[in-house]
Length: 415
Ligand SMILES: Nc1ncnc2c1ncn2[C@@H]1O[C@H](COP(=O)(O)OP(=O)(O)OP(=O)(O)O)[C@@H](O)[C@H]1O
Ligand SMILES: C[C@@](O)(CCOP(=O)(O)OP(=O)(O)O)CC(=O)O
Image (tube, rainbow, N blue to C red; front, side, top):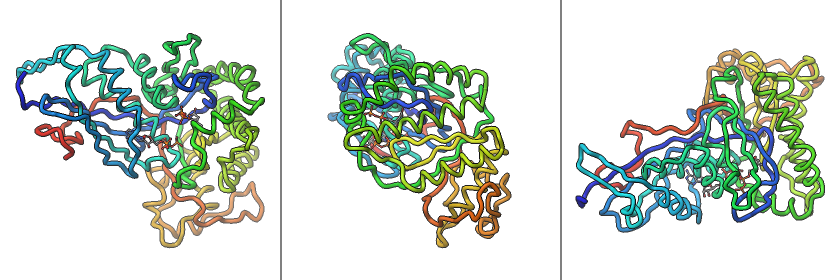
């Protein structure tokens, strides 16, 4: 092998939000869940991880660089991922440059990794899901592993359970599996992102502070103490999974919204049923639920579904753009920005929804009428940090444009 070459791969992977929740492990080490779950993948244009992995015979160390929006801690799963993919590595050849890496060379070669999230890390926006899925996907492509995305999902799962669902776009099911070694606990695509493309997703970031109880600790305590969880996993979720798949396949928004809201509420009920109880939602989360429930009821058919993960942030899924524009008007009425905040930094992502809502500047926000379904509607200025408007999105991709790589093609060091 020549001495100075660098081969690298850059991948981009989305984050996801569960509409039927994963909460509770039957095997903590292998990360095997107590029930199936289903998620929607969020558009990587607005929330994604970009990861570059590089290999060169001149690298003497395993190196990780983090250029993140919010630094993340070194995670002990990185060497695990590297080992797992290395075991599946195949020959790699770049004929033009006269480089050949044979299967057995991978054992001694070191890799460099750099990763970037285009959204805040550890803020309850599932950065670990996008981050771990991206690392596994990028390493697999670099090392020419032949495994498909479902098989890769079973590796990503062992970093963080929800990460396995970020290996696909659209709607994704994590099948809990049966076998002891966990090899059948993996993600499969239910439908791709084009199947239901009029959905609009608005995330209300209620707090960017790190949460008090991590998902891992929280679900361990729930498994140990909650009888409600056992009932949920055995009796409720299996039926909901079937109904949710049906609703998604038929684009039946009323059933989808009903199941999504009910499952989010049951997940938080299970957290309350834990000893000591875990509170992930706060007053602002409850106000958002109430706003959506009252509006849906006043129209007679659901316009919007809500779901909350292990934190206070609301993920609101609107039936279509019209419903999303109306929702944004209501949200901005209740939660106007602080006077020193610009609208441009308060509503992020797909800003065309703002236009549809007829809102161009803060004066328009001030002038919004109170939602008719609530009498004497109060306003809670500053209680939401910001909103992100997005939609269902695609799964992982490779970025061929070298300008998007995070490592230098000459040195393999961060640019
Ligand atoms: N781009 C990335 N590459 C590799 N690992 C990442 C990346 N981004 C985040 N992580 C890992 O995920 C951890 C953050 O996970 P954590 O569960 O605390 O927050 P989150 O996933 O953003 O929020 P939540 O789980 O509540 O949705 C980081 O400390 C890091 O180990
Ligand atoms: C509430 C959830 O977001 C929980 C996600 O938990 P994690 O996947 O973060 O947990 P670990 O497997 O312990 O890393 C629901 C979900 O995404 O299904």
